[in-house]
Image (cartoon, rainbow, N blue to C red; front, side, top):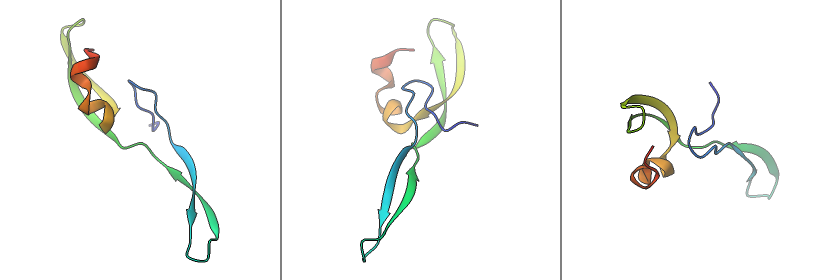
Amino acid sequence: MSKVCKVSNKKANNGYSISHSHVRTKKKQNVNLQNKRIWSISKKRWLKIKVSTKIIKSLHKIKL
């Protein structure tokens, strides 16, 4: 299963974890994905999709 939002195509971000001594170690910041059941107006049926929490907040604007 890929860690990509199906609506906004958001993916993981690369970054650094910085310790107290300022040593940098690479880390990956994943998107906060949730499985959501959404009613599709155009297809007139329920869809199960993986979406980020930011998209869940603005689903009424998108109108799938």
